Amino acid sequence: MKMSGFNLFAAACVIALGGGACGDYSSSDESHNIRARDSGMAGRPATPEAVVGRTSYVGMRYSALPSGFSYEAGSTISRGSGGASQYAVSRVRTPRGNMLWLETIEPRDGRGAAERVVRGELRVPPLAADERLMIGSCDVKGRLDVRVVAIVVADSGVTRLTRIRQAWRADPTAGRFDLLPVADIVCEEPGS
Picture 1 (cartoon, rainbow, N blue to C red):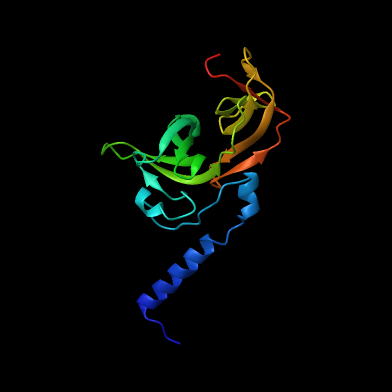
Picture 2 (picture 1 turned 90 degrees about the horizontal axis):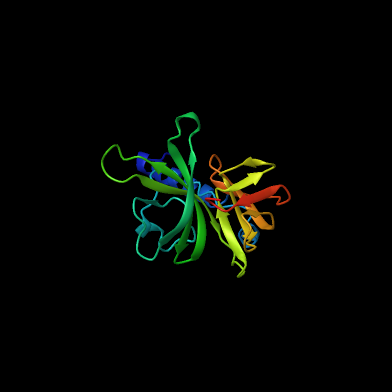
C-alpha cells in the first residue's frame, strides 16, 4: 500500500501520541504519589489554555501562571558548575488541587521573562494540621539534596525536623518524582 507524505506524517503523529499515553504510569502510581507522569510529548510544549481539558499539566509552557493558578513555594536546581538555574521544583495551587511541578527554566535571550515548561508533576496529598511540605532543605544521609521534597511533622520550637511522613526526589533527567525511604532524611527550617 502506497502512502502520501501527508498520510505518512499523520500516521506518525498518531503513533507518537499513542505512545505518550502508554508509558509506565498507572492509576495506582497517582494514588500512592510514587512518580509523576512522563508526557512522552514531542515538539513544542502546550500553552496553559491547551491543557485545560487534559488530566495532566506535563508539557505546559508559561512565563506567568494563568488565572486560577498560584505559586506557593519552590526551589531551583542548579546546572552544576555554572550555577545557572535549569530546573525548578515548584509547589503550585491549580484548579485540580495542590501539586509539585518539576520544571525546566528556559531563558528568553533578553526578550522578556524566562519560560518554564512542566516536565513532571506530583499531586500533593492532604496535609494534617501539624504537617508541612519542605522543598530543597532536606539532608539525605547527612548531605543536603535540593531535589528532595518531604512531608514533615512540624514540632514547635524545633528547627531540625526528623519526623518525615513521606519524601520524593525530583529526577530532572526522567521528568518525575521518585518515592524515597524516609529513614535517613532530616529537614531544616529555612533560615535557621
